[in-house]
Length: 266
Image (cartoon, rainbow, N blue to C red; front, top):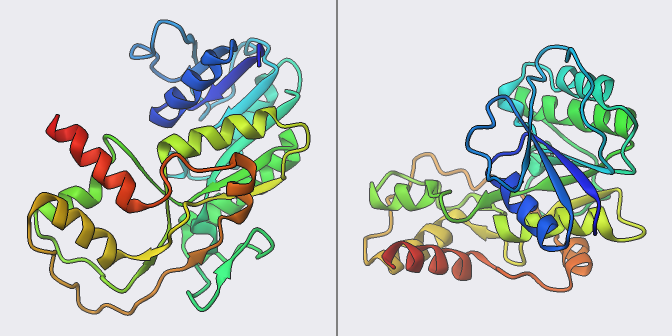
């Protein structure tokens, strides 16, 4: 590695990416509105991309963009401000998007990177616009992440503990934060990366199966079924990601949630 990488929106995922880059000898710049909680080894870059920046950003060889769509009414705006502020186009840029852009499909077949976006919600449409803008402005590689989970991302664990109703038949896909960070670093480093990649683990599963496993680990009842439970959702094919990484450190939700709950107990 040995390059300088700017992580725009350096939150939980960005910190994990930064640690991997630093292990390989790289320097990391972390762009945040408030950088006070950044680890000391990450060079802070204070910037608010909701408005044009008043001074250029420091130069970087590579760029990782992890801006949440919920933070902006139009993702094209912060991306344009970012492009205007970088002194030179990075050699490689990776945009973290979401498999939510495929929400208009059903679960009748596994979806691959060849399937075009089919957004239905406003959030998904913003994500698609962000992908298009990142390609236009930065020639970005787009990495679409499924449901991200890991230590500290405990929404489903809380649902089990609180016995909240769950759509048991909804088809779901997920990726452990650890493997998502590995995917970003691989896309920055391999000579000829794919231009679009779905970050999903090896085991799409109905949501009822996932919460059932968590409940068994906690020795709690399985949460009740939400009504209606139409069995919506999608199934995503992660072959391309698995080919890139060689293996997943967390291959499925059973391994992932078992480790998370064991860590909580410890």
